[in-house]
Image (cartoon, rainbow, N blue to C red):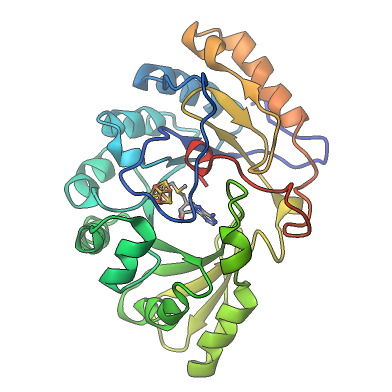
Length: 324
Ligand code: SAM
Ligand code: SF4
């Protein structure tokens, strides 16, 4: 096996693949700026199948399918299947807003999807509408139930912490881990699009942990290998509660991932300004050129992103393109 190891001796075993930048939600924290004239044509399922085949021979063990909203792709089942047929890729996970999952959970499972992460920031319908600008709360709950029923588990729920918007939901979302065997992951808000939203609504994980500790006794729990979250358990609960802390305690030292966009760019870091263009190599199915470019993207992977918040230069331009 030809492994991908960067200049800081980090082995790259995980690809986050944004299969489309399109989305049926418009979440207030997920801004995207597309430059005039920027290419919007996205990889076909055959392009993706080629890509999965190549990366599976470079030590990639885990693929996350994300977006935009990945379930908007009409060929999403074929995309998942084309990843899962590569035996060296042993984990295929999908991050979704959940709105289309009720119908797709079973076919996704049948196509080889290992599990799903569903984004849900509130359990209040009106607040859900305010955050996502869509009235799809019930659809998401149906998607969660369908995923548990078909065994796309352990199911993870991603909740972005936003001061003044969903603080009141922290306890009720944490309590889902008492009712269901789910893993709740509270995520620190990251600055996207330099929009000022971050400055007004950022909330550290420590504040959220404190809110939960005031009501519940927590024990520290194990995460899976390569996880970026710290985990806790409410005593006697079946589920877990984790915190993803890209702002207050970034996890760059152990970063094992690169990101690929639907328009053929590899970003070695979520905050990278630099990307490597693989569009042509994939379209031409040029194996050697593609491997060369993937290796180059790993070579330029930065040691880490700097502290966030001290100035306005550290922000993500297009979250939907990068996939979170
Ligand atoms: N549409 C899918 C979804 O919402 O799950 C997948 C794409 S979305 C970009 C991936 C993840 O990024 C979601 O869990 C979302 O909550 C998270 N996300 C988006 N913008 C964020 C921000 N500004 N800070 C932290 N997380 C963010
Ligand atoms: Fe769409 Fe996901 Fe971004 Fe919300 S977080 S706008 S669902 S891509």
